Length: 94
Image 1 (cartoon, one colour):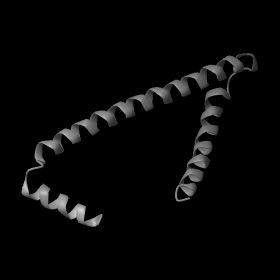
Image 2 (cartoon, rainbow, N blue to C red):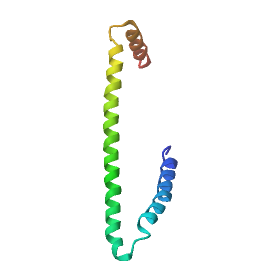
Image 3 (tube, rainbow, N blue to C red):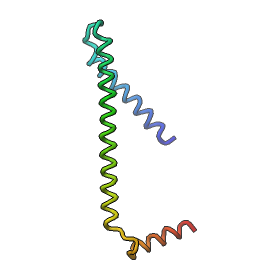
Image 4 (cartoon, helix red, strand yellow):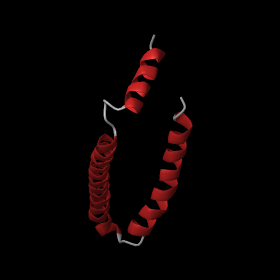
């Protein structure tokens, strides 16, 4: 339930943003061109969203691998600090 309010706010704010954008993009067109323009508008919006999500996902995966590599350079399982931390974590499960 902790994400319910943010999701409701997100949904409402998306509608408040999309209605003016649709009116600006399609409001000045003659009725005979409106059907094709609406389809093209939705296509570009969905395609832009898909490409944007793909780019964000690629960046997140690359950065995750980068940070994992950087952390693994400095952590050795045989080091005293790692052994102490592992023992403390093990004690928490007992």
